[in-house]
Length: 500
Image 1 (cartoon, rainbow, N blue to C red):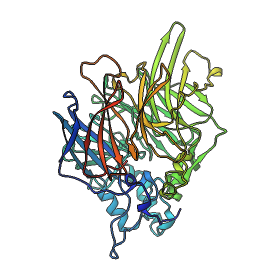
Image 2: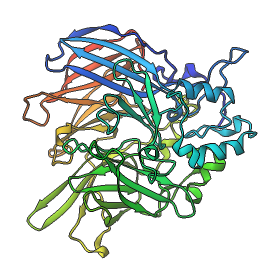
Image 3: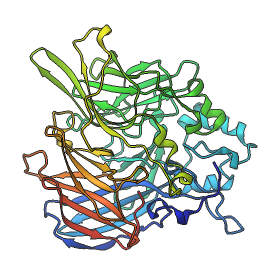
Image 4: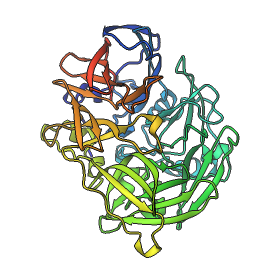
């Protein structure tokens, strides 16, 4: 991939934007319900080039969406008023990368050919061996965790915690958004070693447990699957899986089980290919002739209790999962937004996004039913028929229905032609196979967030919030939809752009 790209040819939500560390009050049109009171946090890439050098040019330009430097956003909602602030949380990592022109970095998809190789061996010693896994520099902004946020993470106090697909954690102050600490799962427990982990660790809001894995590279790669809780913040090992080094972006849990879905998108040479390619994407290999495996782990007793396989698919995100016992049935129901292949990953290079003839693959809804009563010889499963006219990703639900039978999910959708980016929000009624949609011309939404009415009983009694980028007007706004009717009740205009 070329290092040259024209940022002006990219949509504004894929361009670098400034931070807004001092809160600003924004203009609300309509009425946000009085019970919608609290803080909405978002995180994602917000800066796509290195620091400027003596010539005034950036030290490097990021080539893939996933490699942008983190920008955290904070929307404080109270009494129909909204204040907004944001802060870069990976400034140290960007400064360090700029000082050596990325020659020591392992990014998701950056082409290392633009950098010199003189520091390769120092990289090998410091970035992959045990010293990297347990020691972090003093500046907590020296890591780039730009994918996901969680509050009430075990051991983090009042801080919110940022995640990425690497074994990296970053505590962030919930008010100032200043990074407080950089560490990882190995810091918490020396047996949780490995280079990669899930950017979306599931949390049981009833027990407070958080679940994840670390992936150790080697001739025989190992997934260390564990749980963390406030009672046991150092964690408890649930299982060790000696399986191929699959790319696993998210996990699924039910009341009694954790499901690790290993797709046939694996890192070469047991993960070690990352070491000499210094690039996760170039180290991943897809084999659609191999199945996708569902490894079911007992949350209480530990250990793998069942393994199912399905025809190959690629996915980033699960929607929900729950146990269903009815008469003789003893099932785990697992819903996923699935792609036919991981081609979408290569389509998110900026070079391809800027192409007017761009092509983007679409994810569709699939339901898998894992019959826990079936014998080992009957554990090949097939997805249900996809819901018609649903092409979407970044799914969310009413979190009160996590790990329960549910009816609705909300997501970013694609409505039109093959090359369109997200251009609508959707509400999917799984039971009735129906879809409600919200869209506005030249507008692209971020992931929807469902906020339940405090005393509401219906699953869709609440509002859906989403940050919308208005390409035509050159700014963003916070949209508030009534979740039941999926119609707009308020919007908050911002005098700036919030990147996707």
